[in-house]
Length: 295
Image 1: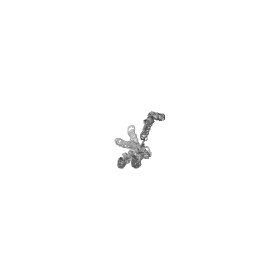
Image 2 (image 1 turned 90 degrees about the vertical axis):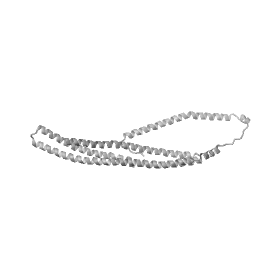
Image 3 (image 1 turned 180 degrees about the vertical axis):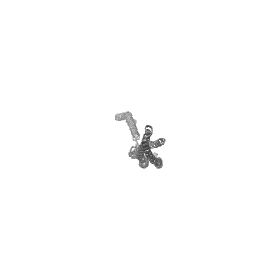
Image 4 (image 1 turned 90 degrees about the horizontal axis):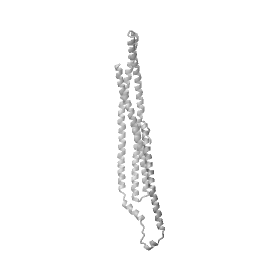
């Protein structure tokens, strides 16, 4: 019976090892899948920013137009790197973690098989103890029960040895995979940030090279109108149409000011809706231990 209790303690440690792996690999998979999806969304938002920069640049004067287009091209390069980052995260981090679902299932099947053999051994021991108490003189029945116990103990010992090998292999592979998966994660992040830093630096310098004063000279030349001098009497003799025009323009400006708070409120409502959607996505990620990555 002491041997049986020793095996119970041994199996308890094995079960805890598998249970902890199942719990934390599930959490890692959920977190990394969410991380990868958010990175993909950031890539898409940055692509939108690049398009807006180019569209805006086409409305500006030559110096600023060139600077913004150059910066947009550099930002587009960063998004190419970020796209590669997303694909590598999915391949090297998320997918290997997903595989642990089947690995853990197979290991649990081995533990279940051992528990069945162990329970059989316990039943044979209990049967032997009852015979010794109820019919101590029946040597034939006791001898048969002892033979059954010995056979069950041999099966349990063999199954225990097999289970030890399975758990040993599982633990060894697990720690190697943890090291490799997170090493790959850090490598992917370092490669992206190193390349992105180079491109961001180039974009910064290109933007600083923009000759804003030259653009201002071109702008002032376009809007400058040589009105000359006018006689004050002719100004007074002018009809009231110019005054009416100014009043209409002033009313239009005031109407624009009145619409601005409403536009700001609409923008704040859109921002709140986006925050609620992000919160719902995070909650959904937490409820799905092995979620798929959306590119």
